[in-house]
Image (cartoon, rainbow, N blue to C red; front, side, top):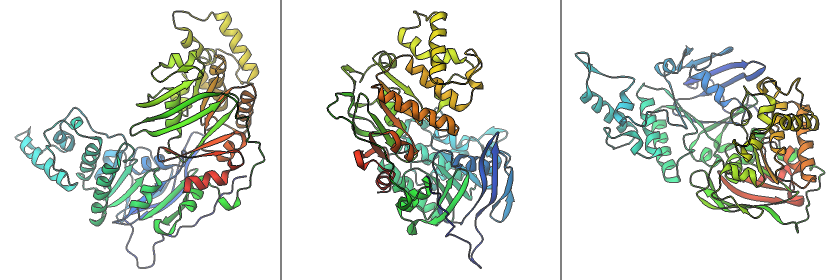
Length: 513
C-alpha cells in the first residue's frame, strides 16, 4: 500500500520579506478526462535557482507550458514581478519576461550563431537588415553568457554545450526576468555541465530567477537553492535544498516513505543453474548510458528500477537494439545481436513493448488486426505476406487469450482503452513466440483492472519459460514479480538486488544513495 506523504512548504514568504519574482497561485489545468495540474502554488524569488522535480505525469511539462502560454490555464493566477500575466503564446511570454530553454536546442543548426541570436529582433537601416549591427548585438549577447566564439560561424559546427549557451543567450536577449531550463544537462558531459552551472550562478547573482528541471539529483544538490516537488498534478511541497535529505526527496517524489513500507511476500529465488538467455557485456553508449553487464535466464524476470531519466528506457533500447550501442556485445542465446538489425532480433526471439505506447507502440489509424501482426510480418519479410485466414486465426486466438475488449478485430486500435491497446502490443510479440520480452512501463496509464491482468500475464509468461526484462517506475509492482532488480541512477547501473534483498525499501535506499 502506497503511503502518500503530506508535506508542507518550508519556503514561505515571511512578513516584510521582498515580494517574490514569480507567484503561481492555485493553478489548474485539465485535458479530456485528465487533471494535469490541480491547484498548484509556488513562489520563486529574484536570484533564486529552484529545482522543479517529479516523475512522469507529475505535471512539470504542463506547468511550464501554462507559464509560457502554450496552454491556457483553467483557473488560478500567475504574477510576474508584481503584475498579473496571461501569456497567449511563447513569444508573448518572452515579451512579458519568461524565457525557456529546452533539452533539445530550439535553434536553427544550419544558420550562423549571429542569425540565430538576432532572428527575432533584426535591426534595419533604410529598410534593410544591418548585418553589422546584428554582429555587434550577437557579440554583446554572447558576452553575457561568457562565450568568446565567432558569431559568423554556423551553429552546428559548435558542441551541444555551446549551442545550449547560445540558446540561453537568445533567451536573455528578450530582457528575461525568469529563465526556465528544461533538462539542459541531458546531453552534456561533466565539464560542460560545470560551464553551464557557472553561468547559472552568475545569472543568479545578477538577480535572475531560474527554474531548473532535471532528473539528476546530484545536480539538484550542487546548484539549486530550493526544490519544488510535483506529484500527480499537485504540489507536494517546496523545500530548502540544504535542509532536505536525498531519501526524503525520493520519498516525496515517489509518494512512499521508507519507514512505512512493508516487505512483500514473494519468492524472488530462481534456479541459477539455468543457462543465460540474454547477455549484455559492457554495453553502453556515450552520453546515453554508462557501460554495464546484465544476464537474464529463461523463465526469469529482471526488473529495472530508478527515477525518471535514470536510464531505464535507455537500457531497454540498447538491449533490444532500437538504439545502437557504441561499445559492448549483446547476445540472445547463441545469436550475437551486436551489429544486427531489428528484424534479426525479432527473428531470433526478442520482442519490445516501448514506454510511450501511443507514440512508439501503436499505429492508431490501423486496426487491431493490423497492429497485432506487424512484428510477425516484419520478421517474415514484406515479400511473404501473411494470409488473411492466418491473420484472423492468430488475432482471434490472442483476443481470447488476453481478454482484449474490442467489438471487432478490424476496429481502429486508437479507439480502444489504454489497457486494451497495451494488450494488443503484448499480443503482437506473443504471436512471434519470443524467447525474451522487454517491457518498458507495461502498466502505465491503464485502469486498475487492466493493470492486474497485465501483471498476471507477465507472471504466466515467466512460468512458461520466457525471459523478461521489465522497466517500471512502480516499485511495488517490480517487487511483486521480479526475481532480480537492476537499479539505475544518472544513466548508470548502481546496484543489482537479488533474492531477499528485492524490496521497495532496498530499491529506494539505492536510489537515494
